[in-house]
Image (cartoon, rainbow, N blue to C red; front, side, top):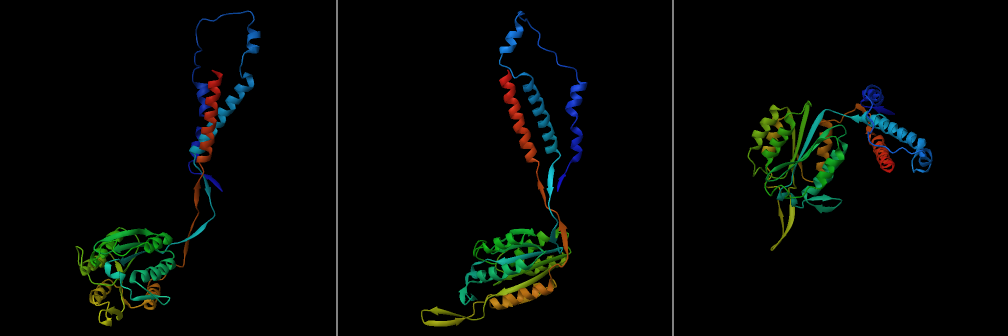
Length: 326
């Protein structure tokens, strides 16, 4: 249905009439005139609009004023109610994009992929399921950056995750800075539930704050941190002397990640492959269930530009008409 945001503006409708009734008439031009006995004949052949032209001029002016008042009242189209789930939970995803994430020790559909590609797939599915949560995205390497602020727009957050590139934030790993940035973003949030899911494949090698110090700050703010260690335990690589089995996750600091989770009331998970990663996110769905109740929202679409455009068009016609008359 159509509604008006500022209906009191309609009180201005009789304003031109009041001006016409209350203000004194403008004086006509005074000057020398030539009186001729055949004025009626001259008036008959003069190129004028006549009475119909004046009537149209007045009608157009009245219509333009009505349209301006309608536009000023801000007409709006109120749409049908739309269910909008809101859980009150603020959930930040902190993803490691340091140089070590390019190690291809993961598989998707039988094809070897690097760690970040696997995270994009599994975390992307997780984001799509988080109906009702305000979700944000932090990317960290040598530095930590807020890639997507907290939002109900899961599609956009997922798109920004899919566009993340290895090394975009530097080659090292600043776990403490990532937690500190999350705490800063969640500090002023009114929501009661604040959750950070941190995914990394290494140890803290950069940044201005230690991970445990940042975790203590997060605990004071009521944050829950789930940490996930990424990387396989065994990987066969080709060397000059032939094939050799190595541990690609030798640099993973599981002790610190476990301490961070325990300190904030969360849990530490180990993801050695895509299947384990999917199980981890399924567990987090259980620990942090999505909302069941919805709130109703009625979308509003502004319509003021239609009467405003019509009024400007009429004003342009009146201006041209006045120039022709003169």
